[in-house]
Image (tube, rainbow, N blue to C red; front, side, top):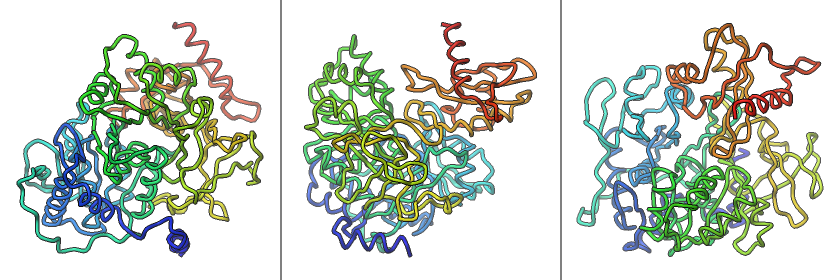
Length: 540
């Protein structure tokens, strides 16, 4: 009932259009039929080809036994197949859940436990890892999956048959007959995002069709995206930032071109920018650092690049100035989370605002406040928890976290992030209310890593924290008390055997006699930081 009232209000105010993402994209495809829509390693599609391909794949999914309401796990690299899979599943009313490329057996099982998916669509080569084989080797009863799709490799029958994804048709392919099912409703769930969160259980974020379409459109408006924009996706589009802030979806809904790159490595990204005359891309500060260093010596032609969107962590102002000087592009900083609020600086903001803040909310329907632990609103310049509500804020988690107390009594989402508003209303993000490590744009929960470390034989106690790192943004440091020797190599081997995502492996393992504690028995993180700093200085 609460969700319906919220959607009613934003439809009445004109923010939400009562149209699904599928309807929005189909209209754009008709309007820009011959324009280039998608450029990817596996295909280049005009808007007409994109529209036809979505229809072909939707029919193929129906014929394979998928139907409206089915939960489908999707774990594909940035590609045309990835985008077509998403929209084809949405078109038949199925709900794709966007797994990260780095997810392994541990995350797969925990997601399956919550979602009970009927199908999985994956890549045979995700930066050298066969995701489909991971599913094939798992216990079918544990996952509940009855249908597999792979982007490459042979098909096979068996208890869980594996199919190749349909081909990407060219302009000569005939137009398919109408689908025998109605499209999704504008209030249906379009897709599920996954929250990095602070718990070991993935938080599933359902995004409603009309609200997510609105989110992508207004983000595109703030960032100046239009039909002449060429957006390069180098971060995995399983994340909200490169998918819809404004990302690939925002670009497509504006009639622009989405260029899909499988890696953020500077040589691949720079080649894609040059070859496709890319005008805008989105990266995290750790990638910005690597690109900036590469530009000291790498011969890149980036004259087409007009702006670089930076999010997921605060950007060092000096790094921002250097990157702008070397690329000739403007920087727009942003803040956002899969659950809701998006902020961006404006293209005409002065440099101190562009490099020193995360800007303002993108919608006039957004309400953002900074509050103290008692929920009292704080004045400008005083840091507190960021809370927000607006037309595209999600309506609650799915499954295991459905009853999480993430909203205030008056409907504001508690983000768990710390920040303050400057005198002009620009947001400055300072950190987290609940500790979290931002490693190369991935959120790492110290509590989860401590749990996994405790499963290793001989580990009696573990404490995990983040430490500044020039390449990673933050590196994960594990301080452990053990009954014998332990090094990172053994930890990595144990994590791999348990099917834990590689980005969760601590970057540094320090063995100590005892973990420092405060006078009330809590782990003394300040003492731990001093200890790890001393260890780093000794090894440098």
